[in-house]
Image 1 (spheres, rainbow, N blue to C red):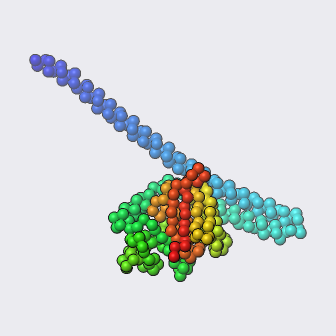
Image 2: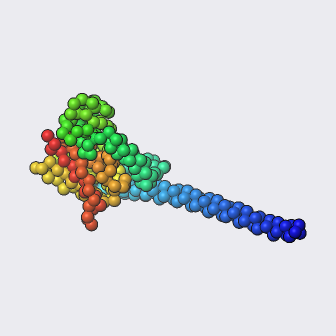
Image 3: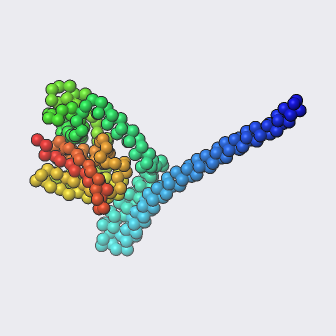
Length: 292
């Protein structure tokens, strides 16, 4: 009997050791794979940033080249020298500015979308817990310099717009609700600072400028086309390739930028309704500015 037990123990021990070695080998393989994936991810981020910088620098070199050609043309064509000298100076200045202002760090749209998704989820939960009305209004603050807008989320279905300097929690009568800084406000300030043309004063002009800002300045959308009905106080923007996911979420940066820009540009409160589009556009964002 004793011998048999000894034999069983002898047979069992290698089995346990083999299992332990297998588990250790599997953990080592997983660690190696994770290390490889992390290295590949880092390399991809570095390459993406390099390509992004290269695009800026190619643009800078192209503008500088055009500037140099314009200066040379001024030497060859004395009659048009003044014009060519101006063009050459502009081209070289723009090229140098873009080259040295090239961003060194690029944050992908996916990262921004994840950050915004947490904000939208939290605000939706707060609104549901407080019983706030789903419809929000972007209220202009014309006395501000530069002009700005606030986001009002009412408690009641029938409400009055609060004073823009109240809040963030408004508890007076039928003005009750939240009065917040919109996510599109900082974007609009930057857009206003960068613009080279005066602020448009018509609904069509405002819509056109904002669509250009979405696509050309901030690259928050692949394309944006506006349909304006000034009689009905409506501007509908067809959005393709929105950078921050579903546009119908709370204060989405794309819709918020449009609403803030319309509220500030026209001096009217703006409501927003975003719905999925069709085969021509991913989202349709309707801003109504005749609310009173």
